[in-house]
Image 1 (cartoon, rainbow, N blue to C red):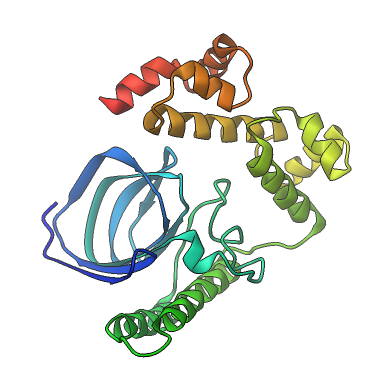
Image 2: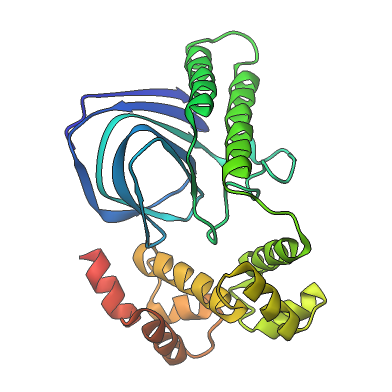
Length: 281
């Protein structure tokens, strides 16, 4: 990476802002696991990122939102200006916010939707103002700096949610609510509950009704949804856990490691051991 200019502003170990300016291509082949909440604002540039083993290409201003545990790598990028906001859960998520702007709201902790939004020129001006205000506050050591930094971060997140709702049409009908409730249940229970029936009963609907609701949204089947969440976590643990494969299988709710191996192999075309060998090489 030929970096021309990186500036880091930091408040203790809970919140930081990096401003990045460089033009030469950057390639990072080895995936890394994110351990904080991150917002990448590529103000001007293009590239291809891999997030939880899915590929996202961009060629304009774009905002990416990553949560702890997700896997991130750069295939290529050529960027003139970018910003990275990083914060721990206790800095922002510890408070009870409106459900849309919380850490389990519209932007974060949602591995089921595209993790980016594209701001227009008017949005860029507003985000610029917030970034400039943040930089000024990082340099300030006056009273209540923590609260001011937190307030500016909240403003940045609120405006990002508004951008997503305006341009990505966040629906609020019964079908979408059921999908959101289902996805939240899966996120909380995928390590121990693997069947559609388990989730349908907790939602007070029949498995057939749940499947029909998924058909209306044009998404995967409930069964595929659950399977994909298990596979994503399996990939994360295979790369970043020091546990043996059989213990990963047990952690993901499989009583038989051999069955887990067949399940994983059928899903991605590689055994857990082969997957580890390829990505850890």
